[in-house]
Length: 408
Image 1: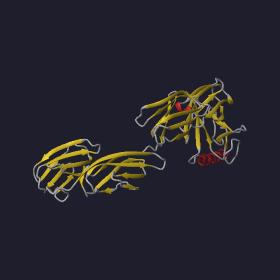
Image 2 (image 1 turned 60 degrees about the vertical axis):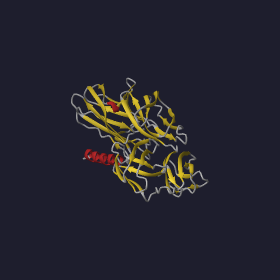
Image 3 (image 1 turned 30 degrees about the horizontal axis):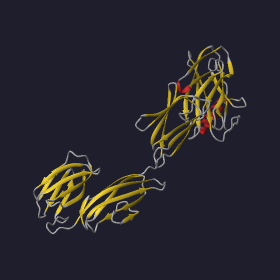
Image 4 (image 1 turned 90 degrees about the horizontal axis):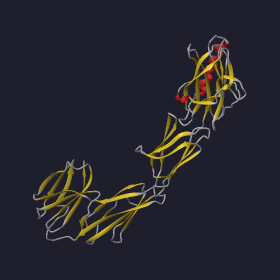
């Protein structure tokens, strides 16, 4: 009856301390020849004490069954426990383990549960008889015991404190990012390797312990591989950056006086926009302004983008504005360009039936050209990638008509 109650109480305490956030290691002792087993549970968490507390710990009740191995963990005041809540986890935690056997032979230690244990925490078994460590993440540890032997001093469970990771932003130049790793001094990693988002190796430290710093990094997604022998733990890390970039374009690169032109900035990390139109006009605080010119000429339009971190970038658009001509009426009312899918359609109702068609991508590269000699004509541009383009029509006297198109 006492054994049944103790086991039930152990289950209740184990369930309580297996709540989310609490860190648990379950160890299993196995007699190799008979496969008889025993377990002990260790918890580390804020607010619990390493000394024995009946509200937190379950004292070990030793079995009277012959040949069944007995495993227990010891509180800091040497009380053998089935379930042991060993206090706050702020540095390497070392917990004494007790073993009692009836039969001589080979036994194994294995970690059958690691719950909420960070991958950078190394869970090791120390065998004080041989002064050796065994990484329990890598499998079971095999050892010998004599008949009727009991020891409270040979074995220790060691849980190293997880690596603490912090970052520094890459700032405006996008080259001042940093990843800082603070390691538990009880462990020395075979290597710590930093990879970028393309899985390319950026930097590495061998026999790494203490504090490690990866510096001069651009913003982006990284991963750090912590290697200990054949064990590898990987941590994803993001380095923020505030580098501003902009690629500006307009609905037309040539237009007539009075014709409205739309302006667009393809920007990154920008929150403020200022447009300088080259005729002393400035529009501030609007990302996508509309503007028309009152005088013909060549204009240099500059957009300045910035953010609250003080980063800024500029881009320039070159425009040609034409005076209205009485020779030919070549306006939005009598020349239209539109797209459907990757087909471009031109309807020309002007006096000049011969038009030169040119299509530019947003980098200003000419990607298609054709001579149109009928009022209604279509062009198949299936070879071009999906995206935004600028179409320009030029008549026989050099007047230009420009529109932005979307090929889908």
